[in-house]
Length: 315
Image 1: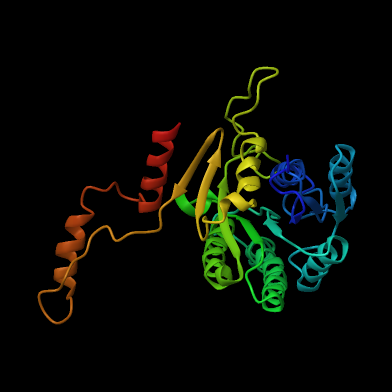
Image 2: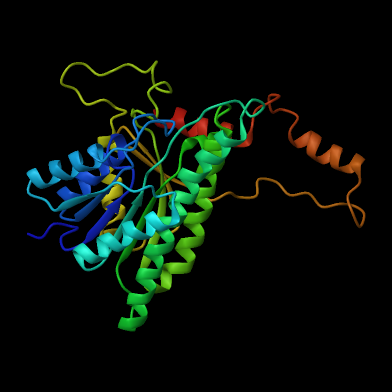
């Protein structure tokens, strides 16, 4: 019996540790040949010397289990290194079928204290890193489709975050970048659908090096039990979205953790008000909007209310 991803070639960025590692192992388990990309810096803030060790270790793990994998240690936030990553997959495997963008760093700070480089570095790795690889993978699929005169196989799975959905007070750079990833995903989904390519984004909740302090207060499982926040709960969704079975899923945002998957609805108009005169005046706006938000606690955002409501209903 053929495996779901047998014969497909995949790239997973940020795959040397944590969530990316679990995703690379899952794609390989499902039959894909995998390029394991990781820049290999030891600090979750992107500090320290780059190292081939993490990517090579995961690639070896895949090969030891009977799969096909090779390591790439370039920086996906660098335009030319991202090009080289995509070209490596194509040269080694003859094509690229699946791109999983996961690489990221954290440099947390309140917005009133954040330095320019703390903003730029996080947006660069998360958002530009997603764009760079997407740009070259998309060109590859478009060229193949034009040459074939028909759609080809292509899957993109991007990594957003609930920090974008619900807000995260100490992560304005991270939340903004992850919101940008969703915009990039939906735009890409529309642009590439005619070539046979889908693009979706996930908001994973997992205990990794990136989130060790976020989930520090959450209980660890008993010995031998699987952590509800283990990356292994998220990886199967990535494997499914990469598969032929997910051909109808495109431009979607999904939340995943601990045995739960939620499909996030696109924003809808909650309320609509029409002016009595040709244009709204201050007093009329105060009358309609003030009344609409009168019962909402001061300082609460609409996103936080909705997403936290989802959490309460699911957990």
